[in-house]
Image (cartoon, rainbow, N blue to C red; front, side, top):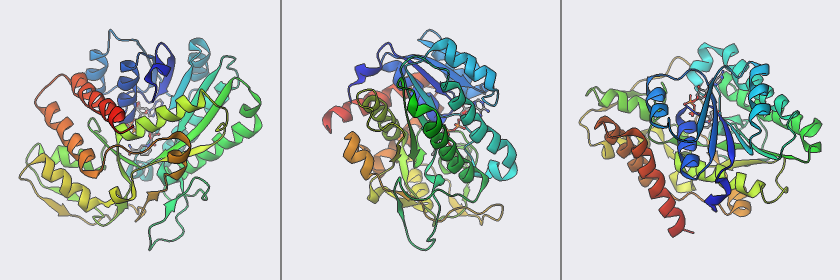
Length: 358
Ligand SMILES: NC(=O)c1ccc[n+]([C@@H]2O[C@H](COP(=O)([O-])OP(=O)(O)OC[C@H]3O[C@@H](n4cnc5c(N)ncnc54)[C@H](O)[C@@H]3O)[C@@H](O)[C@H]2O)c1
């Protein structure tokens, strides 16, 4: 990818303090972009990273995207060249406890962003980040590699809200945005992302880290469930390659793209936790605990043909490399190394891979 595409560009990222948002923010700052970040008030870890980024090209706005007037004001005032919309309530278990809050943030929050775009006059390329969980699961017993044209669905509130995010995006596109010559918009559906800096509850890697750092056993639910695990840097590379392509051709305006791992990296929860344990080199054990609280989809996998054929994108990190980089990030973090240096070391390693595996 030509990284100079983002140099001096104004990039608005919603959810810039989240797990994925911080990786995207730091990568884009490293590429010379100017970041306009929109998130909720930061927690301790997020504050620590933002403090290290203080003298960089970043403006932080902390408010709720459910507030239409606020998001509209920020978009119009800043006139971004690119928008990456990541802000969401992204956890299935939280969505089961707080369905309406999840619906409001994920659906109305996205609606507010789309509504604001109607008033933007400047050229802008927009990516709406949804999820692999937006697809309708028809056959539970065998792995389906979902294509972008497959039907949308989702039973739990999170998955359903992400399918609905796809629908509201398409509705705004067909009714308003496709008539605006200055805009180009796509939605992206990535797999289950792993990488350092994820502290979410009920996600396998952060759950392992939190337990193992205090030498406790980890209890995993659904060990045989299959997920398209993918390293965050591969997903971000996909988002950036798509944004870059959108800035060169209007061909994909209104499209959706999957980003996931190669088929051989689609593994079970058990395989992921065992591999992570190997790279973590801790002594704590992995134990199985039945999940009685909420039901989750047994198998999820994505077809990545469209991105490969049209964007020249492919995953560069295999399963082992992805897990090893993830363990390395947390190990360094607990050794109290400078947190932005840990991100940058891995970003630079990935940039080298991009050049080598071209
Ligand atoms: N992490 C994954 O494995 C994964 C997989 C597929 C899709 N996604 C999607 O990627 C996006 C980012 O996920 P993540 O894992 O980084 O999540 P995260 O929970 O780490 O971060 C969420 C971000 O959104 C912001 N946010 C949440 N509610 C908000 C609101 N009401 N107003 C303003 N900001 C708000 C938070 O402040 C934070 O910056 C989400 O849309 C998620 O659904 C994540």
